Image (tube, rainbow, N blue to C red; front, side, top):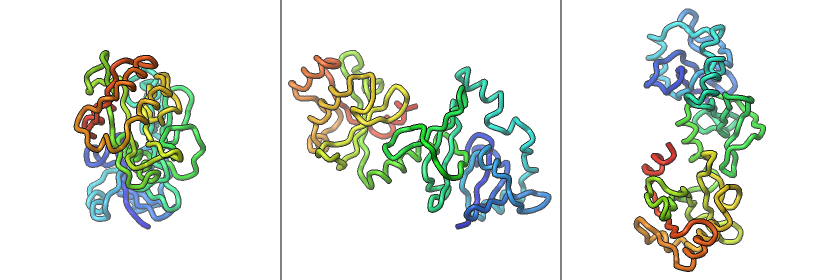
Length: 278
């Protein structure tokens, strides 16, 4: 399968100006050099620069006006250069480089997985796994650089692979200390119509590490109590809800004893969820 990508420094094309155009056919990668035409590409180009998929027509238009190729001898193009790492250590900008992993049967726009490479400190690579969490696990495939926005979109692709066409619903958990659903005590999501071997619905919590983790797997927020709370809300009660889902009194009391009093679960629209995750 042959396709084209345009390479930019930090953001997508056309928001960012094109630095190079490549065409990919399986493992064979070529880059357009204005002085020499299509030549075999150094593999660092797709790892150093952000990849955006384009059509063959777009590629022809860009190659007609593109300038000289960026030199890989210039360390300023290397996203792991000293300056970028120093900014990450100081807390400026994105602390990760983001990659898609291409493999057989998984081209650029349907990658095998996504990878976050830590810029500050030890060079760790976290992969987005089938249990929908970021972990340090070995991954085989071709790493090509993408933006953080692309990486977030892949999380939804991976969720659809795991759960098929199950609907993903988001909820804000509020209480008397954090009553505003725009600033909730907890943020949760549910995969509708997906149940575990015990017939319970699957919930995930957005944790302090900015990752979605399954309820009961890990947290500092009293997850066993929260799991008990949420499994009392069956799917039928949620489908008829609009806005706030109030817990039965007995459940509210159990939450007050084990976690926070007066808990409520509020259904969130996707736009509001994106604002909370920002």
